[in-house]
Length: 312
Image (cartoon, rainbow, N blue to C red; front, side, top):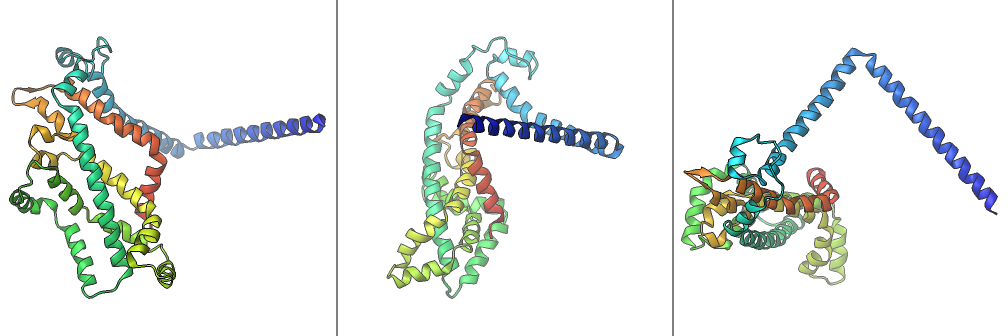
């Protein structure tokens, strides 16, 4: 019983080896053909040189920040910005950014703002998309036109009026100010949800109505679960934006108790100088959650962004 199995395994190994030799021969032939053509050699060299330069442009800044986070201030100004520190055991900058920069509080505030903003963004966005996609009513085109106008108007032209409204509501130094802005300023999410709604058959709604389901039950039990890819897309895009946003927290949350991760490091800049080593340590700490999330969910991130771009 074991001999046929052994023979089969041997034949499979021989076949695999033969295929590998054939692939190597084909690669060598293609490379030889490419090298014999000066034009192809030029474009191949140009392609890899461009990729190498792009990689350096992306990797050198975070590398220099990482090196600076272990240096003293004197060492930072008197040595190469991309050189190694005297010791990697210098954690004084990391301690300082946590104690003096209130980085722990900044992460808490940012997380609170992020969770609340995402929740209401998803709830309002999916409900608006459901109504605009499934119902015909007077003024529907005007509503869609209003969303388009809101998208094309430069945000900077409305900032003074927005600030006055937030100030009149007494929301300066309240997290609700930036939460409202994050929810109201994201018009693009409506169109992302609308594109996904086009792929959900109306027959599902009609079948549910025949069973006596209400509109809200249809939304909660049918529409919302089928919008999970769109919801994932919005969560990814909005998380990136809110986590990195500097303008809204700086303008509407100036108190130290309302500091966020994007404004925490601003404390280490002044007219007398900038503590680049401490700021570098803070940048490294702030980047850690982003890197962990990206490495863990990179497939979902790629799929979500791609679906949001081409769906419908």
